[in-house]
Image (cartoon, rainbow, N blue to C red; front, side, top):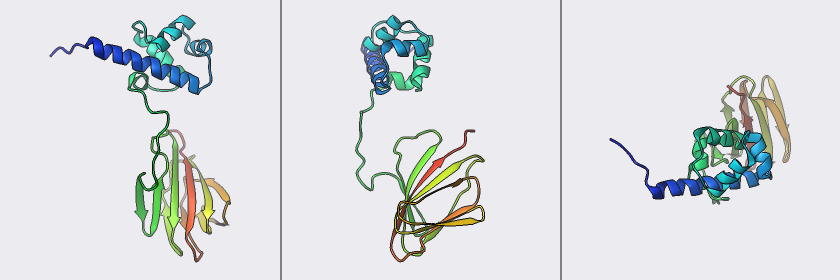
Length: 191
């Protein structure tokens, strides 16, 4: 079966490419000349990408995507909205015993996890050790938290932060009489 691209489809892809390349460059606060330099392509070629003119080679698209730190697919995909609103309770949640864990990054960010954990009084949960080299950051937003990791323990009051190795056994507990809320940031080790 032979699939032919319609002229309309190619025009849409060109328009998407132009919009995405321009938006990504502007978001980085860089000029066309600087982006062309980073991509290793002539400045007029970069300008052509942002106008949606011509028919760039795969090599040019790869260089542009690499310089912008995105995939080629993201360059030609329909443009994403510049902002999206996620009302409370619409992001994924899971229960770990009595503890509610909410995912706070609706789009995947390589190597990073951000979660909001709500602990009723007296509740707790055991964390799962991550890849060797992972760092975790626990911030107590409300109430009181007890963190145990690697044979040590810390009591966190509101606003306190503890940084610890996330590749070891660890657990969280609310020792208080009121609800506790904590934020967990996990910076996963590469690999």
